[in-house]
Image 1: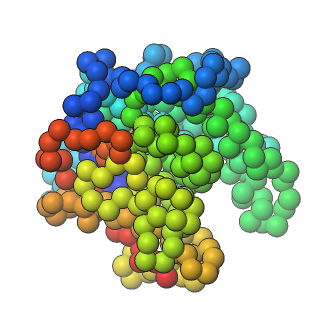
Image 2: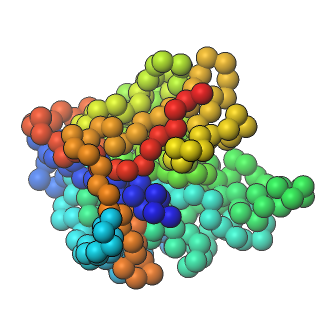
Length: 335
């Protein structure tokens, strides 16, 4: 749990710098000039309804309340970190949550559970509102019920494409109606990271206009594939792994393992999936200009979440100074 909290805290540090980097070329309202519209006139029947979003900047939701956290230092002392929402943030965050639904079928419904979808978005994404506008769609994911049943040898019918189709629909609606040319960070964990990997491969990687809006993609709890010794190729033809502080239009991905227990050969994470490939590994701590902190944030109440920072590739920084990435998460060496 501590390692997870440290990794989440690093997210806000990463995203926070993006506003600095894009600030020189974004209007006072935070919207860049739109060169072209990737999805002209697109309107989703589902996602035009705010009820199908866990978080949106234009509604009062779980991303707006009770987000103070407590930082626990290595010596055991604590400090409350008050949540302060960003005023006119220059970038957006598009978040897709991990496997969390315990609905009885193979796919979840579109009604978020307080101890499921609402819980995890509060934990992982709500505090990103200190640096960006947060958009988090509800989607009909493959449920924990189905995954647990399969592990026990039972067959629960699942529509494997339904969750992706929902997120694609939400993404198109967001770009056509809410983005207005702004920079955007994509953030996904576990099943959400897998869905976003497909979205990036199909929609963003081949589209120069959308690549130009991509601040970064944080694909955590999955294994993005790249050629051995390379940072681009494999899953994405144009999007490289992030390797330095301030780099934009790139992918952050890693798996955390104990130093004494590296991923085994049959691991789903941190291993190659085809000859000539390896799992992408971008340790945020290695991009830092100072050592990683030893403290980790804990929840001050029943609500707590993430923190992050990176930047937008097509926009250029007006300053070379970028806040360091801070994290204590380690990255498994590719095998």
